[in-house]
Amino acid sequence: MLKNIPRIRDVNEVLHIIKDLGGEFNWIDENTIEIRSNNLNYNKVDMVAWLKNKGLVYVFSSTFI
Image (cartoon, rainbow, N blue to C red; front, side):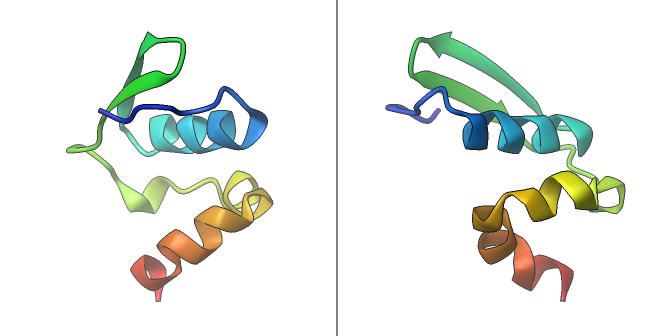
């Protein structure tokens, strides 16, 4: 569970990518989110969405290299 998460475009883009990869998320309250990532499939990456978010490039770049 992640707390103090702002509801901004970058966060929504990350959640969209997590969902596309097979993950699930649920907003518990206004700024708290629960993410279930045990079924992620990195072969399903939407590269256009991924590259729009520079933070993801830095966080996940070692996963794909």
